[in-house]
Image (cartoon, rainbow over all chains, first blue to last red; front, side):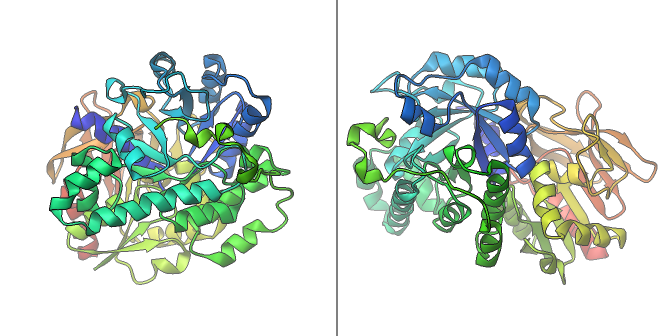
Length: 293
Length: 190
């Protein structure tokens, strides 16, 4: 592995820490996100709530649309490829996107294998539900991790579950004596070298964002409280009553997550939040987080 | 000696580590009152548009600008350098804090695919391994600005103006702390 290349892949994610990355479907949305203080945007054709509503196969966005968003904003632009779809990832790299999200929000192209992310110059972010899944993705070359949450629901409960699982398992690794690490690695299904790194540093070896169901400034601050380095907001902004105001409020809440009085102030008169879906009414097969392994 | 790190967004943790390794006490700066009783301030890497918005909403920008006018030592890296500049090429409407008499070009090397690690030579400091991540460079320097380093093509990447240091790159990503030591020495002498 090229150490220097991995440093700059991981390094861009380091620059995003403490920030909010917003899903946008048009250059106009991208402008609103940048104006609100987003540190990056995720360019896609439909936000997860619409993917859920419309059904069918969700794929990589039209490269023309992604390129237009890249021309419109000065912040980094991310785009999604399907799990295991190496060619979609190559296409996105060839048009020069700054980060690729190998995402369970799109319909998986491969139910067994993820993309070999070491083979790319462009960095990847991948979703996880627990520490083992996070370390498997990092082992495949991911330079940034996010919780899967349950995208397009406006319900933060799954993101909370996933972030708590990651942090709990990190604490377990940190407390474990060295002779237990190989067995823990086996149980987690994770590379031993990465488990050792977690023990040494007390955290994931890459930046760890929250994603999937964040709808309010308080949701975003909660994810920071649980140990996230920053927050992705998908449908939560542009499916709400006043996207510009909500976007700015979420950016403020993440920067000042330890100051409830700031969160109170920015939460006033935000208009309607996205309606949201209770996770328990979803069948397991409707849950996007179950895609990937 | 306490050195502040602008902590509203960006790679704050990496600068905290580098400042600690330089033998100073890092202090996270999130509100104007956090700037009291510090000997210097580091502006990290991050997104310059986000830095401006977050700091402007709470008046942190005004306090930084007024401290700079008194010669308070400030060291900006990447996005931090952009905030310290007088103006940004091609972005006449993006506000800066106008701390150094320089003009910068954002994403001057291109997008993320051009990000790289390089060993540079800096005047008064020596060879340092640093990371360029969607990095800017400096396209104009005023009379009071001293150029400390250029890249292979001759673009200006590291400058000093009195107690101010500005770097287009990230010295905090590689564990090579020579430049942080240099800044702490400036702060110590004030």
